[in-house]
Image (cartoon, rainbow, N blue to C red; front, side):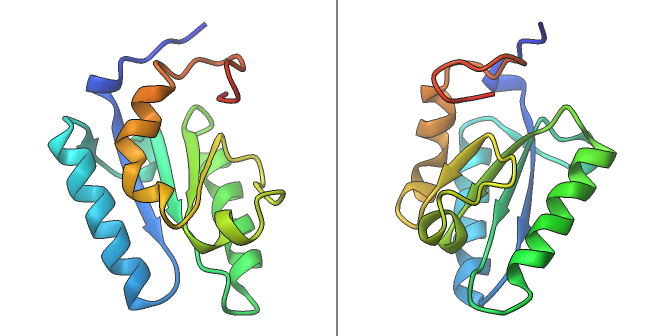
Length: 127
């Protein structure tokens, strides 16, 4: 079983959609850096955060493609799906380990700390 300390976690953020989503991702990025997380490329991240849009017709297809890419290139990463998609379609998590809606995504550090640690087995809804 692999257990990771939250303090040493590396993360990546991928953003789709409007300028508002770009800003929201910047806010999450700042909060994570302040909490001691380190930003990196998705291939070496412990956590991959996807701030996803639902507005365009191709948004869901692009989201599924990106999640598949992460699973191929970094199958140990925990995937956090945040934003419009997570709020509008909570049943369509596409294998994400955590879903955060529009309000919840700004509390991402609290949600990650609330998980205690990420492990390779399911604990309280986290994988």
